[in-house]
Length: 122
Image (tube, rainbow, N blue to C red; front, side, top):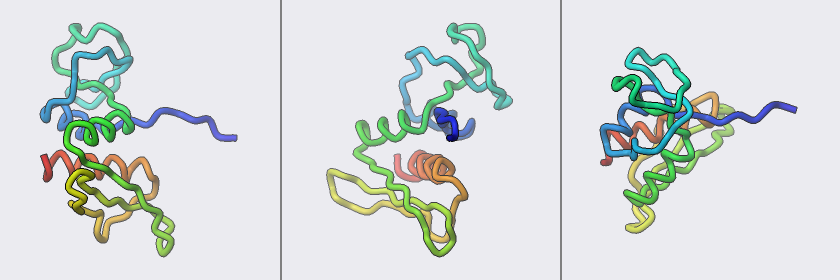
């Protein structure tokens, strides 16, 4: 049986989340440096040039609670890959899709969808 691990947004997506107002006051067990390296420590004051390693689930929940944006990950049978759709749950409005893009892993589709929201929708 495979070991389950926590999945994190990419370094680029983490920087966008912080720029868009994601709560950076909480304690995280790991961070990205400006070079995208991962560091593990509890005291984020040690280096001001860092972004928290935010889990995919936390980022998706933040988008839903703050902006009413819901991300749905789809399995694309024709390619055995994954895609996404993005909707506003309050307005019941479709906002975006992965279109002709597909991803080998669902967590890659999640990260791409989160990044799409941050760059284009908020």
